[in-house]
Image (cartoon, rainbow, N blue to C red; front, side, top):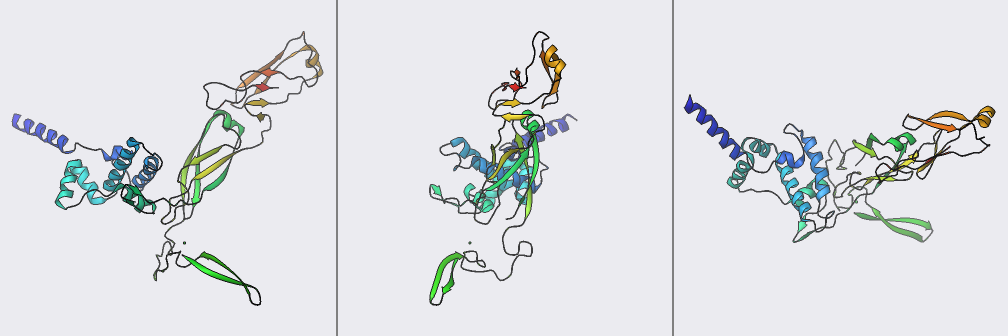
Length: 323
């Protein structure tokens, strides 16, 4: 019995040693049961985040970029993933050395995933970026007061040159260049097209984005999702830019960080004072008082300090409410 116990402990220690090394699941931030789609999505986000072009001179970011590429290369490959799950990084290295293969250049993986060129020498080819997607996002004043997380689905769809002549008049021609609509600027065409994308190399689809509305965001503010735009072959996706537009409110008007509203009172209240409550944007009640000793003339404005909009970028600071 003791021999079996010692053998069990030895096997456990051996498994711990074998599985020691880089935790690719942790690097990508996915679970061991993550689907291929989830793995690709995480690689897409992290490789963009740590790409050297976005972090010039940042060695930590460059190391993370390499780690993310290595993790994606293993977890996106069924055979490599199976070996890694059973034997860890060391077992994977032994398998690769036995087959004369190692990890690919992280820039090559990035280029294969997003399109574009790979790195040459100490640099890499200049990325060609796609167009930006600019979208309007209509929100309520309540959402800008309290803040909110919004789930939104964005529809996505995924060039050689030829000379075209137009006759303006007999003997007069206008000549200009435009992208060939058949070869896409490659100078050659494919005889049999893919039945899914029909030769366009992209497929229509949609993506779920989470937009975080910070308390105090102003009308006209923009929220940028870096490189989340339409994807096209050999092109880095452009940004998706949401511009905030506030719906008109039935009670409050916003001016910078202050709020304005109107209250109608009776003649008796104007002469003898009053105590009223108005409902604020967060649903709480705000009390308005006027002592009996003071009359309230038409157009009188009462200021409630700190009852306006949250001031973005500050902690617990608010504008004023004018009634």
